[in-house]
Amino acid sequence: MNESNIQQSDSYVATDDRQVGAMLLSASTITGDNVYNLQDQELGKIQDVMLDVTEGKIRYAVLASGGFMGMGDRLFAVPWKALKHDEANKRFILDVDAERLKDAPGFDKEQWPNMADTSWNSTVETFYAR
Image 1 (cartoon, rainbow, N blue to C red):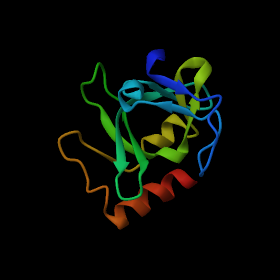
Image 2 (cartoon, rainbow, N blue to C red):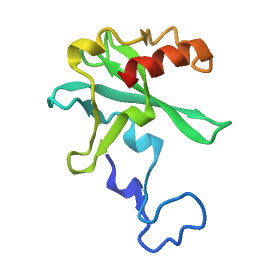
Image 3 (tube, rainbow, N blue to C red):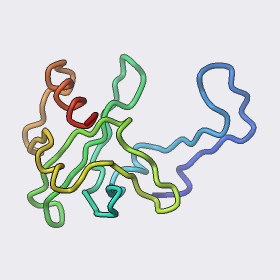
Image 4 (cartoon, rainbow, N blue to C red):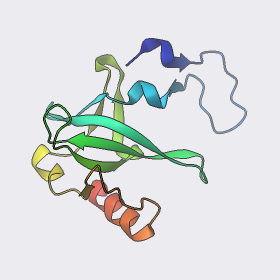
């Protein structure tokens, strides 16, 4: 994580739903960041971030997992709210067992799903809500 791309506001006076002291990270800063679970097992790396431009928020982090040096990776759209930022270790935490992640709805890097599809979205959200 490139520290120069982190912006922290200590004196910002919130006039809307933003919080004082909120941390902002650029998408390019978190791309490539490691994702670990609560058992401190590495699950993969963030490959991309999917933005919902209608809602104005991050919808998913695309997690690459299971390959070796980028080869054979399986991709998973992880709801952004399922990830926790581990600032001290410059990584993200996902509360999913490594074996369970193998059963997550995933996709191949050559054939991405329609992430705006409500049925697909419901399947993904339900999996990570467990």
